[in-house]
Amino acid sequence: MIDQRLLPGREVFRVFHDHHGVARAISHMIIRGAPAIGVAAAMGVVLGLKGTHGSRALRRFAAVARELKATRPTAVNLSWALARMERALQAGLDLPPRELFERLRDEALTIQREDIAANRALGRFGAQLVGDPSVVLTHCNAGALATAGYGTALGVIRAAREAGKKVSVIADETRPFFQGSRLTAWELRKDRIPVTVIADSMAGLVLARGGADCVIVGTDRVAANGDVANKIGTYPLAVLARRHDIPFYVAAPLSSIDFSCPTGDYIPIEERASDELVVIDGQRVAPAGVKARNFAFDVTPADLITAIITERGIIRPPLVRGLASLKSALTKRKAET
Ligand code: MRU
Image (cartoon, helix red, strand yellow):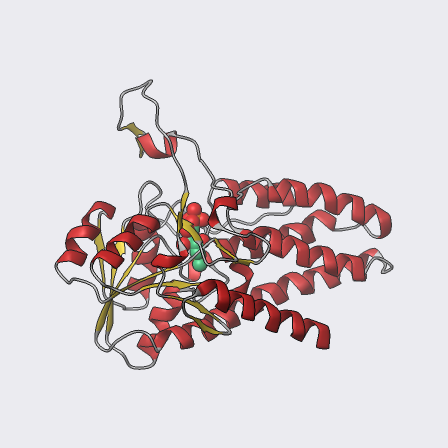
């Protein structure tokens, strides 16, 4: 995996040979972004179960999954991917170690492949919502780096460009990890999509001056009522968008929807080490000993969201109803197969 802590300065790829390494990579944000974390966890399971089978594999899975799941709590993609790997394991319990390894590896690669396909499909749906020309404001990084490839929020922007629309992007820098200025700007520049970075606190002025036509963000977890957890700073952006009458879209693959979570109040919010906030490039930017809180995500209430863009189509308010019909369509499809 590309080490996202070092971008945009250096493009360093890291190779992991066991699930401990993968778990550390997720905790330390070498890899980040909800769908990418899910794919990495699936691959971590493959590494962690190598050489085992039968009941030993089951016991081992419990330990491996526990370690991977403990890395980051907010993105539901992590437990979603682990649950899928567990189903693949259950189905292959009688296989000899080599064949079980291949079965699990294939499942992880399928999750990776399906994520790219989902991003492309939701990108095509979302592109219909993007004007021509238009300026899109985004927060954090919901691009190829945060997924198996292509991206969710940036997938919509990419698809709009591929459809011939003239789209440019305003990227919030996204304190404290700078996913916007370091990663989103890096990706878009590589794709020759015009991007301007602003400090998070500038969004109010930019939107008040009519500087963006819509806001598009990704998500780590969508609750059944349509509340959405995403990178800290997303909620104030949604409030601003409503104040200035600008559409606020959330790009969410099905792997980020948690139908078992009733509302945003039940979404676990990660709090990371305070040094991530008050130490920049080894330099302390607050007096030593001063308390700091570093919440990694916030929750945007459903009523501030104009639409949720999924690979199965666009869900419009009331989101709770749209999500419920999506759930029954998925359950029906599952029963048929
Ligand atoms: O802490 P991060 O960088 O993992 O947070 C990522 C985000 O908040 C993204 O917007 C979200 O995971 C969606 S990525 C397609």
